Image 1 (spheres, rainbow, N blue to C red):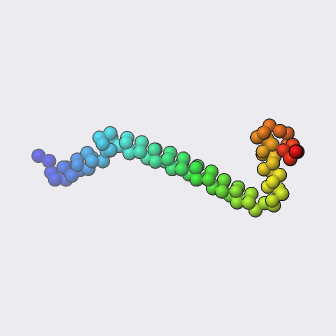
Image 2 (image 1 turned 135 degrees about the vertical axis):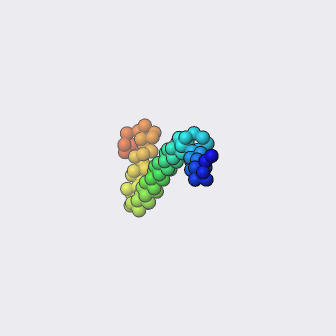
Image 3 (image 1 turned 90 degrees about the vertical axis):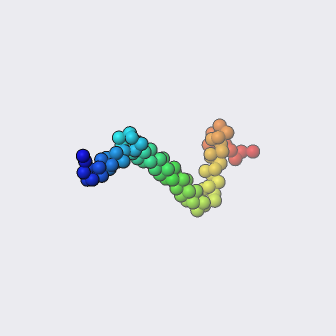
Length: 87
């Protein structure tokens, strides 16, 4: 016959695993949470960088911004730099 302490301890052992998988499910769930946090953190950092870049760009002189945007447009059209402003 088992004592009350033995039954309690066995109950703790049985209930400690995650769906009977011996605790492996908890480790997998922790790994999934960690990976999600890392992805969300990376996405947050990218959004922050873009926001800071936009804010800094907004505070640049208008001429400098226009030159950079013209160079980007020329590049996207396949023109050499400085050719986008020709008529």
